[in-house]
Length: 363
Image (cartoon, rainbow, N blue to C red; front, side, top):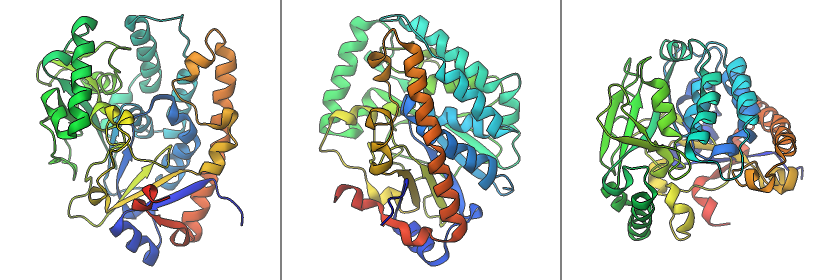
């Protein structure tokens, strides 16, 4: 049997609906984008196919929610020419280069350069006037010991947060407030998400860039973002801290599909859960989700047998061109994911390839 590049995982409602009726672009009411830094590169060609082709004729509102790099991906996809914007983003992202042990201000400047390339001259205006797409961005507002860039306070603060999280994820609410930056033209279906203290901030052209920077600001590596226009005072950081793989009910009570183009066949609820091996996602929140991800066979054929990730900066330290060449191969191979997705949904074969999402942890 031919091994396919993509796997398709569905929650209970999505599984039943797609098995009976297949999947059309109009079935999708929400898109989810996970945090994960360079891991997004394997999805680059898939994003181009989804935004530049499959959703190109979209007229009904589509709500997009991303954390960290997921929000940056969607900010490119929401522009007038999504394929060109994604290409700009790819080029700028691939060209990252750093000295050994760079201080946060150097990483800050490099990521701001990438974001400026992504947004170009009028990206915020294009995003917030898109006739169909409604972008939302997840960040966290830091509380207590995490609301500082001083390592003497931040390190013990993060350590304590990690210890509390190992006992209960809800305990992270003592350290971080979930912050939802949203397109105010229409409230998203996930507006009332719960589980953590939350701030809700309307996006406008004056705060969209800052919200994106905050959503990707990794503690210890980058500086927190302060004084975001329209947001409560405080320091904001990476949305993946609470919502790494977006284990959130994004379509409560609804019937529409939540499309989740993901880079891995796993679901890690929060950034600090990467070391909490016993933590499992709450699949009751994912009834409407269709997650598409590279298969293990596809990943095994990539350079070094893995998708791009942040460890590559250390593997290729002082060899930036080699890293860029490696990443380019990952991006190029991603075309097989795009081709497989388009063929599978357009031929109606998707129903035969669905697997229950809860089986991710039964293999």
